Image (cartoon, rainbow, N blue to C red):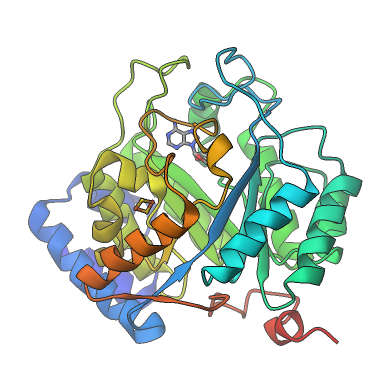
Length: 360
Ligand code: 5AD
Ligand code: FES
């Protein structure tokens, strides 16, 4: 199997059959070899820097009903909240002081945040923090809406494709959502010029190595700037409450493969990874990840943005997480960078980064 890892490193691509065989046939020894190669590639492009993104979870209202997600609309026990423009700016101010130069606005698909209101929020962050990147993670919207928010000053957009395979997608989502539409959104985002992030859950119910092979082929074709992956973790108030969580082992293996397939990609060691294992994020960095996304949401609402059970850091102030992550990264020989941390994969972008960094 080693030869497949070598081929992946040399060519950045594998066939569907090769992906499936590699994922299905993985062993602990093979994983060690993969991580060593992934780290070498990561150090070549990003050194030992770890980029931080300040996550602001500004609404947990959602019109969708994804079977895996704790803030799905059918979950009557979720305590719902919304942050207004001022509260969001407040999070940014705190974050800026802590060295954050990227703010990620993430929320459920909440109709209250119209294009007008969202553009307002984006514009005010843009005005107050001209040297920061603005990332949006608002789910599916129209192409016009994506364009408007880009014009308002957003730089990046995160929208996981969740699973490429249409039949598998169908088993994770209600009829109103489709794999094809999700993918169309991603192509739109890229075409508009966003630095685009996609991703998937590892070990989601019914997922097979073939599904993961399809995910890798799709990601290769999309050529995104970011890929967010993390283990599926059951939430007790969802239809998937009784399903097993994804494993640390498979998540790390997929991180290593992603680093070799897209050497310059921005790859977070996610909160979900830190939730299934106390040193999950450190292990993620050592498997090839180069981003962490601590929470900047106000502590009062932290505990209400629960996509899955046992989420870490829900009681900690942003400053504590910042310090904690600094220590964690230093313990494995890495350091947190105070910078926007843009992707080096700019070939795939239509709005050049120099224009984004120094607006006229
Ligand atoms: N476990 C792990 N990840 C989840 N997400 C949603 N619900 C869960 C869960 N139960 C992920 C989805 C979504 C992202 C914001 O969080 O992939 O895109
Ligand atoms: Fe939040 Fe460690 S990162 S407390």
